[in-house]
Amino acid sequence: MSRAEIIKNELIKVGKEIFLADGDWVSTPFFAVIKQKWQETKTNFEPKYTAIGEVSADYYVYIGPYDHNIEALSDNALVLYDDEKYIFKKKQGFVMGGETIYYWGVLRRVWEAEDD
Image 1 (cartoon, rainbow, N blue to C red):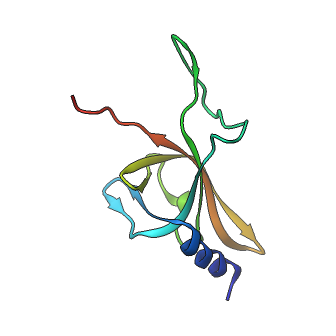
Image 2: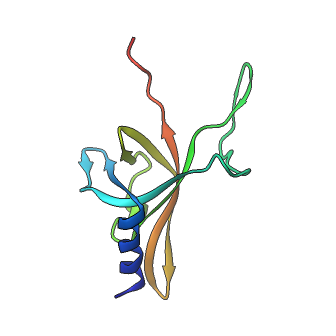
């Protein structure tokens, strides 16, 4: 079994079932890890300044299987998980020995206005 398949099988055990969406296309469900980055000190990728000071957005790390190439997605692509949406701020494949082992990225949660 290849390293990529081993990692994919482990993602099934520890990951969450998610979908990728890009325009009208939505992937079949697959497993990936999504972990919030608030615990670490260097997570303020895009500081936002408001009238009351600096606010940090919700950022997450994405680790997904080799057979879901996130680098091929447009900049408008979404990760869909548990009624929440995320956009990629960074996406990259991890290559070892000329083989893509897995994909990783930085996600930002998308907040949508609630209907009144």
